[in-house]
Image (cartoon, rainbow, N blue to C red; front, side, top):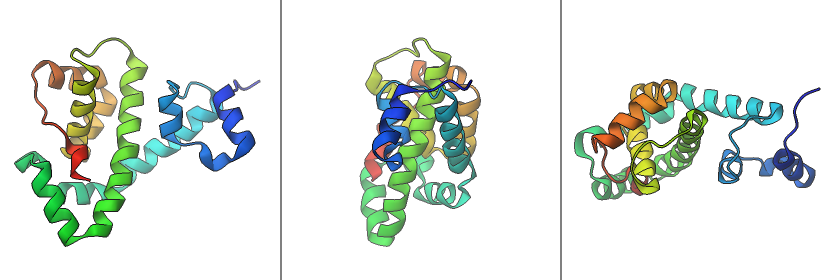
Length: 158
């Protein structure tokens, strides 16, 4: 019999659209029940395969400038719709990467704030760096945090 998740069942009872990566993650759920695992896998694939959003992130040039004020100002002036879409995309990409990091457990070093900044920074660096972090969260994110190799905070661009 498939494992069931009380969180998933509770939310599905009221409105299946309330099941989001955000509310699973905020509840400390790592997607370890069957239904949640399928949902997280679909969302992960959607993020990884969304080339248009990754190209939008590349256009922001976070890796080059690391200046969220400039990016926010120019981005909203040039393409407000793109910035709104990227805001939603980055939020989902963040939760997927956070869940991948939590699945390996342990301390990555530094505070929760550093950890969040490192995750957001990794997303800002683009799809290839993101994929590396998904495959090896402890190696990629742990090294980034230990070496203070991130800039606060890509998420402020939106």
